Length: 172
Length: 172
DNA sequence: CATCAAAATGAATAAATACGCAAATTTTTG
DNA sequence: CAAAAATTTGCGTATTTATTCATTTTGATG
Image (cartoon, rainbow over all chains, first blue to last red):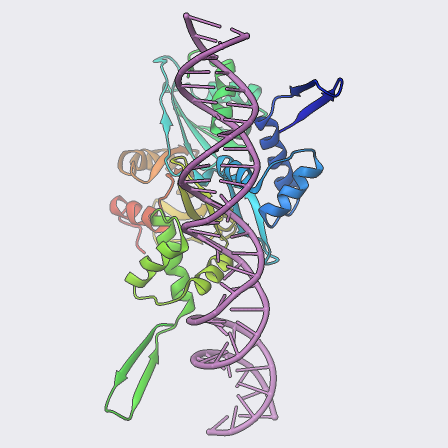
């Protein structure tokens, strides 16, 4: 919890919450992607150094929420890692409105598969190449199917978010 | 340790080691890719049912060795999963017989790449779209190459299994 | 701004997991 | 084949992580 505590006098105390949990979660992501952390206690310490004060219980919940996994690296140490897309066991295929060009968007691992009206995959892929640079690593299009490789650490929500920015027919 | 102990008489005892740890590790992989396991105790039980007798300590080591990670799925449960990097690192390309249309099948992560006789990729992809719905999320074909996205939680064996159902030239 | 509902958090503790060490097993060597 | 070296394993336990319950904080609403 990031709090700016301003003591105005010995009785009053204004606490200004600078928007919170979200920031902390981001900090956690940054730490574990940037360095080797072997336990929650350790991570807790690093967070403290960044100004985040919390208990192991909360951290445990945060890690669960972020789908962070503890596994071992090649050196035989345990490390925390952002759980890759594989985690999403349930492969939800969000089919959207339209009826127009884009017909459905599905996910499997770090791949998004978009089905389009026959013949339109290629042109839509160009759109994506043009506007989805932040979330997609690249795309390949067939006649009515696009396979798009999602960048690491980009969530499916963010993908949909991005797509809907330039595909009007796509609404959550 | 899997041992077949044959008591021939009350003095002699032949122990036949049926090759070991490796098998157990394979079994562990199979179990965790095939089902949702939430704790080592639970996995231990499943292994016991398969005839593997071991303690939690050993299992912990096995999981470390296999780089299995415990993380949470979308349902909020904890599950064990094979660390994704591993999947991609063992990028084994199984080349099959034929000489006819399908020339090879390779895997990388959850992607299967099929090489065909030039010009046949598209038609074969149609075949796959038609018959491989359970294992593939979608395909894209070029001239002699098909990129097929494998559904989550479908093993490579299952992919081959499925393909061989409608591609006669494909034999394990 | 008082009040109710929902979300977040900590403290304590239960549950799960990893590890040190010694024993057992397997592999290597002479 | 015996001895030595290396690997594997279980037991006991320390360490680590998740959860319950109570409390606090945040958000919404009249």
